[in-house]
Image (cartoon, rainbow, N blue to C red; front, side, top):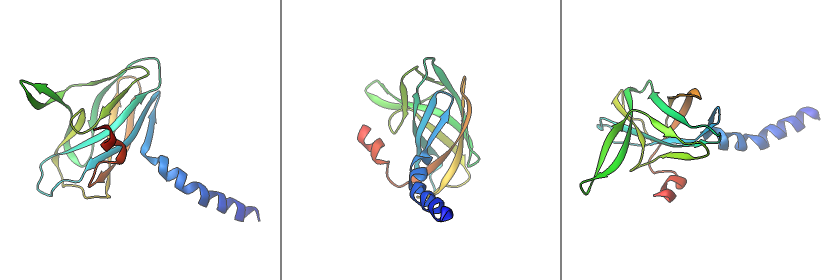
Length: 155
């Protein structure tokens, strides 16, 4: 009887566990829903998006990213310059205390270069982020044909 109750609990909790599987914690930082848009097989690059929440009272800084699916990863942002939108590399991204930073289309993002291959809808790949204070954190990035609903709502 106890075994049946335990199995029933596990079965009921499994959807809750998978729902939160796209949130990651590093110290006072919480990273939500890392994703990348499916790109054509010949595209030379891809981008990764997520949201970083700083629940603490001290600022942190995102210093680097790496993944085995690409030769290199850089932080980029879109900026308005001379009436045009331009993408430029940034060396680090400040995460304010009690605030958040969105990595989203037309905002900050992680650019992946020298891809071994383009990932397809539904595939996942690891991405390691390095923070100044929170240290390193490995995420699992989901490849999607369309932005997630919460990302589309912000833009």
